[in-house]
Structure formats: C-alpha cells, structure tokens
Length: 86
Image 1 (cartoon, rainbow, N blue to C red):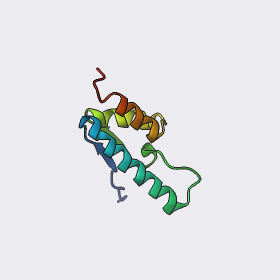
Image 2: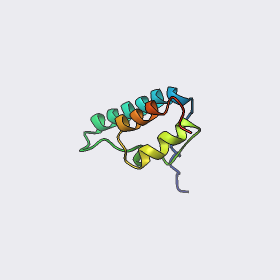
Image 3: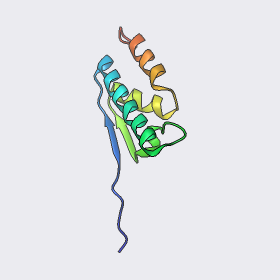
Image 4: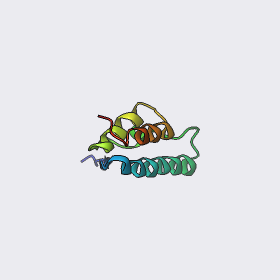
C-alpha cells in the first residue's frame, strides 16, 4: 500500500488592514525556508503549499502573492486601500 504525503494547506484570514500582519508573517516563514534550505531564491507560497485560500484580505494576499508580487508591494497596496477600496 502506498503511503500518502500530508496535504499542506495555508488559510489566510481577512481583517482589512490587519491582514498586513498575515502577509508579513507569511513572508517571514518563506524567508526562513529560504535560509534553512539555502535556496537561490525565496520560495513562493504556492511552491510549498498544496492548497491556499483565504477570506477578504486573506484572499487578496493569496492571489497577489501567487502572481509573484513581492510582499512589500502587496503591503503597500493594502495600506493604500485601508481607507476604502471598493
């Protein structure tokens, strides 16, 4: 019988501008993986997780980070929208 690898799921909660903290924590985790594994580049979340989703701001972070946008640019756009984007 073949053994199954565990499914790696990343879920990012919303919370408006407070979602920036989720973004910064995620970016820190990715940088720690980069350092620990001595990679040439910081991996994207989609390189490490099988399923990624979120609600509200978490969904935005998921989409933007998977498209390759750097965390600093993503955080800047979140902060500019904190007054109401939509």
